Each structure stands twice: as C-alpha cells, then as structure tokens.
Length: 321
Ligand code: UDP
Ligand code: MG
Image 1 (spheres, helix red, strand yellow):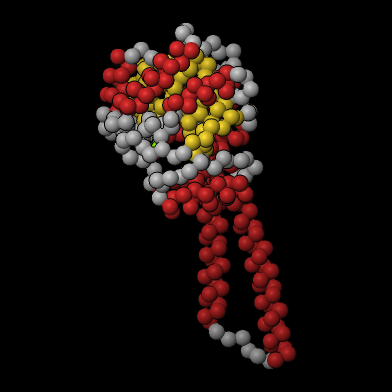
Image 2 (cartoon, rainbow, N blue to C red):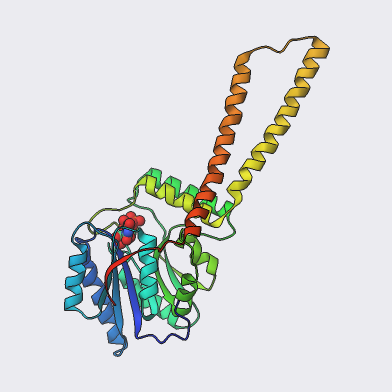
C-alpha cells in the first residue's frame, strides 16, 4: 500500500474499468480529453493520466485502449487475464493510480465528465476529502429494478450501521489520503458502496439526473444485481445470523402455546387431537425454516472460506503504467 508520504507523479488520475466497451471508448476518450484541456486552461502545469482497466473483455477493448495509449502518453492501462468483475478492476486502478487526486468513473458516459472540474475544486479546497455523485432519478431504468434497488437501500439501513447513500454512483474524486484508506481494506469480497461510508471522511455530493448509456449495453442482469446486494449485506452485517435464533425462539413460544391448547382440549372437553395433515404441515414448516437458516449460515461460512484462502483479487496479463 502506498502511504500518505507518497510523492505523486501526476495531479489527477482517472481510473476507468472497462468490460466490452469497444464502442463506448472513443467517445469517452474524446470527452475526457476535452475536460483535461479545460483543466489545463485554468492551471497550465496540471498533469493528468487515464488508467483504463480492461476487465477481460472479449471484444477489441484492449486493442482500442492500446491504440489510444500509443497516441497519447497520458493513457495507461492494465489488462486482466480474464473477467474479474468491476470491484476488482476498481481496486487495481486505485492501487496503480499515481495521482494526488483519483477519479473513478464508467466508460459509458453515464457519469458526466463535465463535473470533474467542480469535484476537483471541492476536494482541493481541503474542506472535503472526497466528491461523490448521486443519481436523483432512475429515469429509463426498468421499474422492477428501481423497486428492488429501493428495498435494498432500506435493508442496508436496517441491517448495518453504515449509511449507504441511495443512488450513489461509483463516479468519485478522492484525495490521496482517502484512496489510501480505501486500499487499506484487504478483503476479497469487496463492496465499495459499503467501504466508502465505512471509512468516513467528508464527502461533497453532486447530484444529477440519470443519463442513459451512450453505446453498448449494461453488464448487470437483475440476478447479478441481486447477488451483489446479498454480498453487500453479508459483508457489512452479521444480523442475518440472528434470524435463526429469532425463528427458534418464536417457534418455541408457538409450540408451548399449542401444547397448552391441546392439554385444555383433552382434559376440559375430552376432545381427541386428530389429523396427520396438521402434523405434516408443522414438520414442513419447521424443516423449511431450518434449511433457510442453515443456508444463511452457509453464506457466511462460504465468505469466510474465500477470505481465508487469500487468493489474489485479479491477475494482470499486460500493463503499461
Ligand atoms: N464493468 C467491468 N467489469 C464487469 C462489468 C462492468 O469493469 O464485469 C465496467 C463497465 O465496462 C463500465 C462499468 O463497469 O465501465 C459499469 O458497468 P455498466 O455500465 O454495465 O453498469 P451500469 O452503469 O448499468 O450500472
Ligand atoms: Mg453504465
């Protein structure tokens, strides 16, 4: 890990995770260099770098990036040996970025690069350590996805002590101190949306309306998002583990109540208890709950297993830094 005494070779690094973005990259590059020119107009000696992280794309993303880097010395890249996921790509970018300020953003121009000068100003003033961005609308997104996204933020708020900001994007500008704090998280199951609020510091929020992708398509299916949100809950909360105990106590209470009812029926009204159907239902209900809670336990065990193995977060095939 780089420490805070680390002497930055560049002022601002822009880290861009890319997975099958060959069509989006040319317009992204055009836009970001336009912003660089704008920054240079204000401060002539400012130095920038773009660090593309190719997350095992199967199209010609790597080739496009290499061509850009031959043309422009500010363009650097890391190419993974396969697809390791956006979290791994972000981590690699943050680890290898050289800037005193580091921006992370998507390649599809859903994160407006025009905000960067304002974000830089906020963090440079020293008042904030990070500038974050937040979507205030979910226009153009499928309704079911928006609904579950909202539920997810509710559950996170209830289950964890950290405040995951609704609609917060991965588009951020961070100071070196902030980046080092993010990098001090050594865990494999990385969930950035939780790491940022966990480390604290002061964040200035910039809001904007949802912008549709310029080209290409989203890499997130509903199922992938669902699993990702489960990862987040497990990474930052152990409350689901308590579900087993709560269910146990509840069922214990229920069984006592049933026993009392049966005794009263037997001795006061001399009624016999009948029916195998009710017994079968009770058995199904209890074994269902047992399997459900064992499943939760299994999730935590599986996560612990991956953490203990200490495998690398990613494997690099080629890089130019
Ligand atoms: N991405 C990545 N690895 C993946 C999936 C996505 O590096 O396995 C990148 C992708 O190229 C893009 C960013 O992460 O730059 C966000 O992905 P996407 O636009 O598909 O997500 P959305 O904006 O729809 O949430
Ligand atoms: Mg996107």
